[in-house]
Amino acid sequence: MIRIVKFLSSSLTIAEMEARKIRHDSTELWTRAVQPALWLLLFGEVFNRIKGITSSNISYITFIAPGVLAQSVLFVSIFYGITIVWERDVGLLTKLLSTPSPRSSIVVGKALAAGVRGIFQAIMIFGLTLIIGINLRLDPFDVISVFVVIVLFAMCFSSLSMTLASLLKTRERMMGIGQAITMPLFFASNAIYPLDLMPEWLRTISLFNPLSYVVDAMRSLLITGDYSGIPLDAVALVLSTLIFVSLASIMIRRLIE
Amino acid sequence: MYALQVKDLTKVYSSRIRAVDSISFNVESGEIFGLLGPNGAGKTTTIKMISTISRPTSGSILVFGVDAEKHPDKVRELIGYIPQSVSVDGDLTGYENLLIFSKLSYVSKKERDARIIFALEYMGLKERANELVKHYSGGMMRRLEIAQALVNRPKLLILDEPTIGLDPASKTKMWDYLKKMNREFGTTILLTTHDMAEADLLCHRIAIMNAGKIAAIGSPQELKMSVGVEMIKLCLDSSAIEKLVIPDELGKIIGYENSSVIISVENAEKKIPSIVEYLLKRGIKIESISFNKPTLNDVFLKYARVAFEEGESYSQARMTRRVFARRSR
Image 1 (cartoon, rainbow over the protein chains, first blue to last red):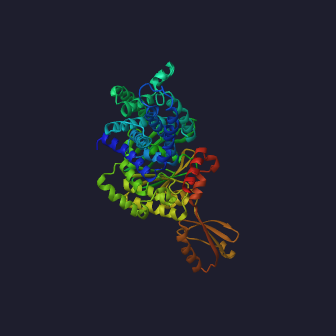
Image 2: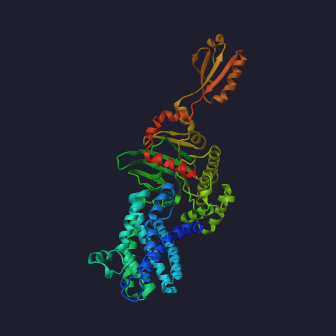
Image 3: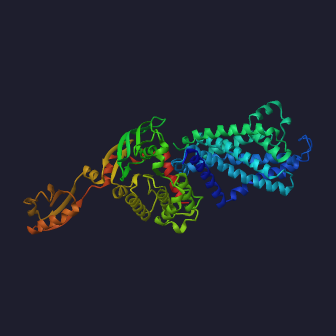
């Protein structure tokens, strides 16, 4: 077998492992759906009554639906490092890294696994938007493109999380840093308000926030249908994913030494 | 051919602790080799380096001639590593554990299914193959780990404390499986333990480690001989003691004690009947017989005389606790 085939097969096997676990126990998927539901049903409904947050004819609750989706995937990914620390603690990670599979393929596989969880989140949220009557463009091309964005996004932030796990090494510290990262990322993005409303300094920061590009891409695909911004979003997302996946691949051995 | 050649292997941690201090040893292909030593002696660090999980500070490791530093990926194709803590995934079934790890070890699709079925049957796990592993007992989890090795067929199987926390029956079973694997598949086995009975029963050769160094190396028999001789103590009629002569092929009188004579022999169990026969023929009455032979415990205490608690580092104590916590869930 050539190298690249082996690499892909190992990565897909790790993702398969995750899918099988979800099949055995899907409780986590349901509990993780609670938070986005609250954002849409409570926060979204209330702020929907304030006019003028969004410029055009889009209702506020529709406007934040892609943002809430991105946020819930962000949560899954940013805490993914905790799973890795746990697997290290029980000896599973050591075992994975002592197989002939290249270490980077294990990291890519774990990142893909976070993507698998992200897709399940998306399906839950799409279901929810249908129930409360939010009008998203759910035609096959858009949905599949959103899935691709979600997988890349989950890979990006779960790799960041795995890198942090390699440095911090305990679950408690990971909980702390996860909390400390998610909220600034969320508020310094266009997830729940448009960039135009931000003060100048915050808008500058949000330009370096991968979440902004993810939300922008999802909003184009699911609401406006205006694809002109997508190439830039894609470049930003792919680039940051590559950086973090490479970083995690280099760092992961620190976790088991 | 050597399965493993370790030369001047050293690992220094950042705090300048020499966990492993310039050790060298060879393991022959087809051998069961044991690393013995108190907690904190450097056993786990050594096998972590051999498994390419941790990088040596200096020294070289050759696994079937392949340099572990230059080609860690090639070495990983030759070895199977079973860490101290249970390394099977509790959230998957027994079958899935075998399937996933065989895929990660690139076992060809053709052989995979047949090997998995064989391994499940061989390890007595067939009935519960489709149950989640978190419902298995500690012994079953260990058996599943051996089953993984049976599917992936490594040439060198490395086990860290394979029977720690197992009950005596599961322990004995595990020893049988390891011996069988060694015999039937020619798998070379490297294991660490601090269970003397385990080392004695299982290993062809052992190395005793202490404070990062190898204190002694050899077959269990050789090591036992090196710490002392086997002795028979005969309690006889006092009049007979003075003029007692023993032929050389039976043993050597090395001392007297009250109304007893102490004879040093090789292989006490076999010599006792001949000595009894010899004495009876000459009409000497024997009041009682006892014998004493050195055990691996004596060997261990001689070469690794270190306070057990002293040698145990915090992280290792934590690791051991984790193993138990997980098993008792």
